[in-house]
Image (cartoon, rainbow, N blue to C red; front, side, top):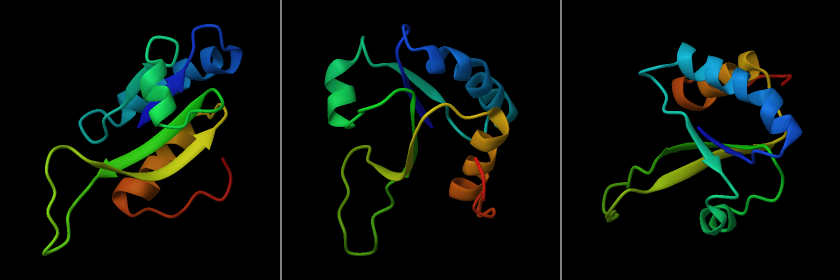
Length: 106
């Protein structure tokens, strides 16, 4: 899970402890990464980050039989713009990575 943020972004600052709490709860199961878009403008552009905060739920690319896959690749499962609470982040991780139900409300 990638948290695209900026240090000057109010909603990013509000969500930061929620993101950290979700990362602690899912430690060892899901990798959480923070990306400062001001420090990584090229990557933010490649990921088409248009609003902050943006959460990207990525999973490993698993090539199907007969497909070739070289290097690390990822599949975008979902993109959410806006601050979320820890419970919503955990519920989305459960849905995307562990086969749980899709959260009805975030």
